[in-house]
Image (tube, rainbow, N blue to C red; front, side, top):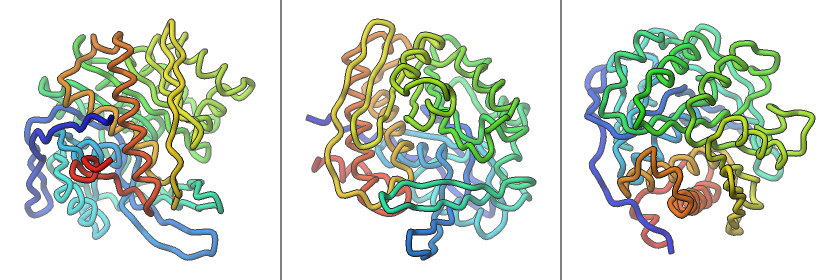
Length: 328
């Protein structure tokens, strides 16, 4: 039985290029961008994307207050992103939009629905967050923090990410999703440094097989997941594609089944898993100390699996809402 997170209120109001955020429970730090999706036949569509933005949208759609902390442009693409934030009830932490053009990602979809990414990001909106700006927009109302993807490699956003994690109070849950993008992270000192810094404070780390292969290239992926858990001390959620999710702690390695579904594409699937995990965690009133409760972790992971399964059955990053989860 899937436990539905109850509606707890929704996010923000967008007026003339600004979005006023309300007190939030989960703050998601990272990039907002436009995914240019190319299917196997060469057909092209565009959707709002960025893994952290997708995670924030998932959390808010599931009825849990969420705020996105990342640069959003004043250009037409940025206006599209802001409309989606407003529609999904996600608060915009920075308040003011930025003048840099919107970051773009080209997602090539293969025959199995898997996506490979290339980025157009130099001098774009995703980079336009400084440590000072980030620190001034994450307040004591933030009881859970989610970071990852370009926030680990794109400067000055990477320094902003590390700074926010470093000053997190003792009771704040920190979740990290490296979401490795080899095209921008290979041989990157910034990525290596920032990942090490955030893992030192991480309570939960969500990784895919591709992430583990990138971080530990000489290891089999499950052995790499075990090593990551031992080195970080965090709960590791290893999402092994359509096969399973491994939940690893210091003393446990639990395998959760993933339901069989007809996959349209996997864009946003991992993001919606993370969002589902955090949404249930917050809706149950759990905190950082509860990470030691294996049953609580497994329940949140199962909910994340159910959320991701729905996302995979439709194109682009389109996570389910509370009403859709009621019937699953």
